[in-house]
Length: 239
Image (tube, rainbow, N blue to C red):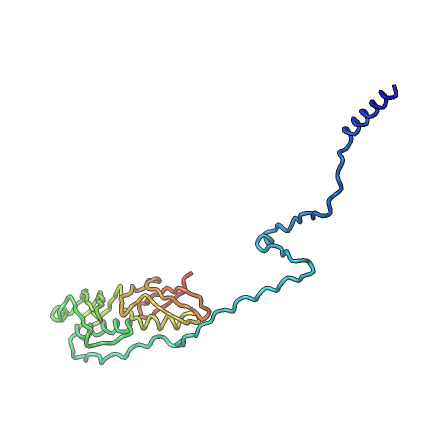
């Protein structure tokens, strides 16, 4: 009987042990608990240092100095109008005087004067405009391989000839474009334009030609150029 009671007591103790809370072993101090770390975006981009707390983090190096380039001399005055050759006398023919005025428009726009190679060819002759009246015709003025077409309106009276003209395109020299881009840009160190030698440029178009400027801080800026009816150039940074 005593043996039976002892066995029952042993079985009961096991049952009670199974139904109670699970036994837990004491933590092993030899294994360290993992650190959660800082999961903020700042820490993802710049992880925490694994150096001991007693070691101060190294100071970051300062940013590299800004690259500077030698500035170009910036002129204060607009590109100089070339000195024009002597105008025809009043005794010269009306068409000769009109042709001279058209040539001066080309020379001012281009920034170049070359009377020997500049030619004017009109669709009327002198005999066609000697009578009193109003005449509409065209004239082509050539300079260094470029040809500018002018639409001309001439009003002939007994005492004088009054003429007006328009042109869709006029020549601009590379020298003039670079000069004006240098004058109008911000602290330029290097300037290039897409006009080579002498090229025809559309009048009144804000994007008629392009210049690329590198400033003294090594920043590249694109400038768009416009040829005004007066022959002047206006450049604006590309937005």
